[in-house]
Image (cartoon, rainbow, N blue to C red):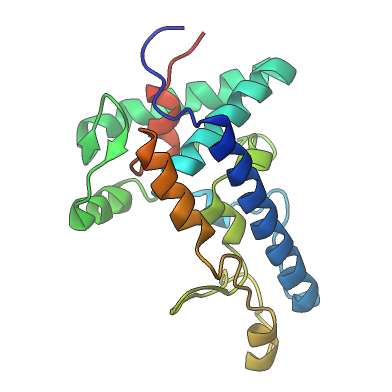
Length: 214
């Protein structure tokens, strides 16, 4: 391999991240069950797959691990993801608000907002253009997992996708609200990750395009 590995987690943190993902998935599955048919999410619905957005170091590590797994099982699909990431990075790299060598975003919220707005119409590199599926669905970022339902993170309540709950009452929306990480396990894992040299936010395209390849 060439270059540096920017998003490799120690095994213990990677295992803890897998447990965190399982908790998120269980909470969202329960919320969808309570939503009782008000969720339109399905393969081919790409409402949440458009535009650049920030992902954490944990997300990036998980994503690249998944892409390596995909390369072993479905090499053509993995090559497609890498090619789309490289193409998008070629367009956005010059305007990237951060370190273009590592793909780490700066902490300037205003610069991030302007950057994300600039590329809001670009599809995620993981999105298969033929069938609208996510090529790395098993390893997708936590923000992708939580999009769709009303989700609470501490005092913050994220609204559901506008395609969901179109005929639901306020009580039905409230009943489907989930809180997947009430004790902020993700925050503690991010601190551990940073202590081990894996830190900073990035984007899907930046993480893939700046990562080493075999």
